[in-house]
Structure formats: C-alpha cells, structure tokens
Amino acid sequence: MKLLKFLFITLFLFSCSAQKKFQIVYDQEKGLNYIADKDAKRLKVLDKKYILAFQPDKLEYFKILNGENNNWDAIDINGNKIFEVPAEDYKIPSPAYLSENRIRFIENNKIGFRNKKGKTIIPPQFEYAEQFYSGKAVFGEKCINKKIDDEHYIAECQKYGLINKSGKIIKFGDFSYQEIIK
Image 1 (spheres, one colour):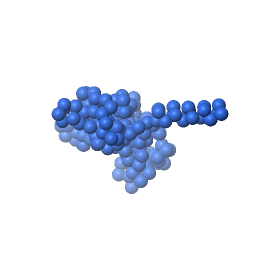
Image 2 (cartoon, helix red, strand yellow):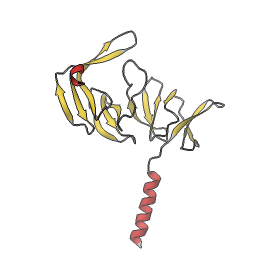
Image 3 (cartoon, rainbow, N blue to C red):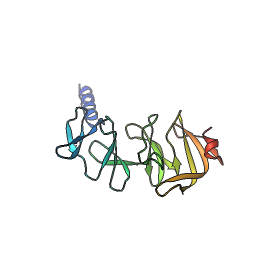
Image 4 (spheres, rainbow, N blue to C red):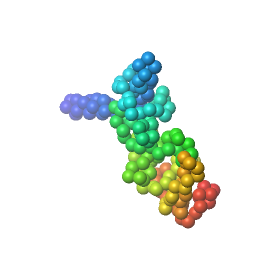
C-alpha cells in the first residue's frame, strides 16, 4: 500500500511540473501581450521588452520573441528567457525555427541545437551552423562576417562540414560551401 501511495504522489508531482504548451495573445484594448494557455486563458503579462513574437498563436513549449537589442530570445511559460536564438540568416531579420525537431541556439558565441521542448540535444560547439535538412546540418569553422551591403553580412568559413541529428560529424574539411551541400 505504501508503494502504491508513493507511486501516486510521484506521478502527481511529475505531472504538475511537466512542461505545458502555451501561446502569446494580444489584448488590443489594453495594448498588452499575454502568455496564455491552450484555451487563450491569460496567465501572465508578457514583459514589455519583447516587441514581437514569432508565431504568437501557435502552441509551443517555448516562444521566440524579439527583444530590446533586436535579439531573438526563447522564453518559457513563466516568461523567463531560456536561450537565445540566432537569426535565420544574415539577410532576413527572422529567427531560426524548429526544423526536424531541432532549433539552433547560441551560448557563449557558439551554436548548438535544442529540441521542441527546449532540451539541449547537441551542445553549443559550432562557430557557424545551419538548420537541419534531410537529417543533416552544415557547420563551419574559421568564419568571418563579410559585409554584403550597408545592413547585411554573410558568413564565409575556411572549413565546412556536415553533422547528423545527434551531432556526429559526417564530413569535415577544406570544402567550400557549395562542395559541402552537394
């Protein structure tokens, strides 16, 4: 009986702490954004430092928001920043997105990958990395940001490689970008 009671309490506590999907809702009348549950019930006013939400009404375990310094931050249901998301590329001012259950994140100027729940699955280790496509992602080393116009840059790396979804290097070396994506 004690074992059954212990299991019941453990399951209850685990279910209470489980992550929940949420969305961002905008109240036009008040001019405020709210963190809301799946039924659009407002849970908390969103910090005013966030000026734009990426896919606000989509239910997710974290939301990507644009903040004061034009950085893209992923927040949890409590409004706490959990990681920084890079821009999709240097030409488009939109954040990286979930692709093949992987999203790029930045930590200490290195790029890693997290899953749809925000759990790190490939630790930050890449100077440059792209989203996953067909089970692989391009990464680069010894990169410089080359200015292409007054506002935009593009990364040029001396070495490129490919990783699989677990982060194992498939191919790496003195390849050009065009050679590695073939």
